[in-house]
Picture: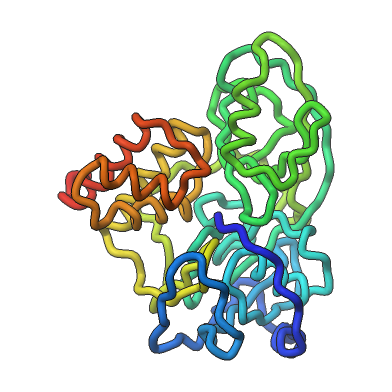
Length: 330
């Protein structure tokens, strides 16, 4: 998920973030697609508002609200800011967003790409809870992701795992503290490492915040959906690609190669690091697309994503996955 600085609200943002009367939940989200988009190099500052893609998206709060219109964002933090402005709330109230469903469906989680006709549902902070867990095994059975704005949360719970036996913990819960240590602002891979390094055969405490639910959304606890081959990364005429560095760009719907490669790399992220992050996986696939050998790929990956300090065996497996996708071996 992308990270980026908050942008100062301007007058035009207030005018464009008005609520829409008499629109039903699940309405068709519209976007006035830009005919073309200039792709700037990573690391450049966002372009002025007048040069950004003129796209309008529809949004609602997942537990129920009128419909709002938002536009003029280039990364996830700016997106949350626009949604918060539309509904007169503070951006940190938003835990995560899903696309085209108000349910806590991790396969519809908003990542680094939004289909130009996608409808955005924002899940906000709900009930706080504190739970003590006995770590009877090395692996807790959790897959962690983050919202791109400093909140790590649970994306999947493995059936039969340690955490699966603690029924108060659910998919979608934001992890706020581990053993009294506040982890807001900590990236998902660091949270996964902290949980993995907790000593075995001892208790630990989690402070969690679950998404607010409407009455009709109360249902049996979910373990999170498994990746499905038919799931697409975007819908409609194209996608808006949100980047942690540089401006958002309008791109074609991902190719079959990109979809297969990103899914496989995302699986490897979960296997090696205990996280899922389609934006990170897409960035790695993009880095490796034109590389000739694993050494060249490793150097480019270190330059683009050196903060992650990926192990060599993981990098080699990612290179293999990209190569298999190119050759159609999935």
